[in-house]
Image (cartoon, rainbow, N blue to C red):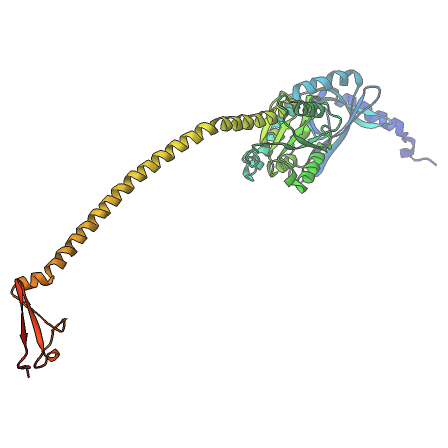
Length: 399
């Protein structure tokens, strides 16, 4: 026997229709809603299915989630407009402000039909994230590290990070190999994706490989060349910027775009616009050193001539000083000899005899003591004006 409640039993379809009708009646308007794209999937017929989520800012845990659909008619207009305004493709991880109409389908349940998008909201969030990364790199003291490295005088050994099939890599190699000056460069490609979700991982892996054989390289060049502006977001991550900023070789970026610098450009040693410009930079650096060497070579004869003249002048001055020194030394020695000569003359026997002294000789020897004499010996006494001979008859010695 059926109860009253059983008489009111609904099929699931009927219940879902009631829900649909209630939603359409109570929420008939379009609403602007913010969230993060956690899934973006395009179909072959041009529709785009998304998943919109909201997270707790403190913990990162999901607090809300909803499926959404952008029908092909809307998506064909919305996507290029968004890319033009933000420089980013409509993809996972973006914070977006969407205009939606709430939809409930008996079979597929609750979902959102996307009607419009406000790119300014995404731009604001991108700018905020970018500033947070810049502040973090600055606070960690790494943002200028690569720029502070000395650029090699002869950057001949070049490690290139790029895709092997990238047109920019071919342009770079052609420019280097066919330079009009005949400079020779050693180039090795370290492959990495240059667009898409794997760019960060690929470039960091390539940098690690270069670091393993770092003594073989003078400089690192990261080039892409061309490509959609919307692909540049992959060069704006913290991990990529941090790895490049702290890399021990100068990094040149030639990503091939005209917009403001990416974070990779910001931390690199030198940023140029294109791969061809990166090659021109290396060639120009080599040319500067070649011109410097040529100038030095031209200046050698004049430098040698000037050095010889300077040395001759120095030697002449030394020679002038030397004769003067010799003359002064000889003059001093003459003076000393004169003094000695005066002393010798003052102590000569003739001078002594002239003073009234006499000189006694016995057997040809000067007599200095009475003990040298004996009675009967003959002696000679010399005076200043003559001499006298005598014989010893008596000797008296002091007691």
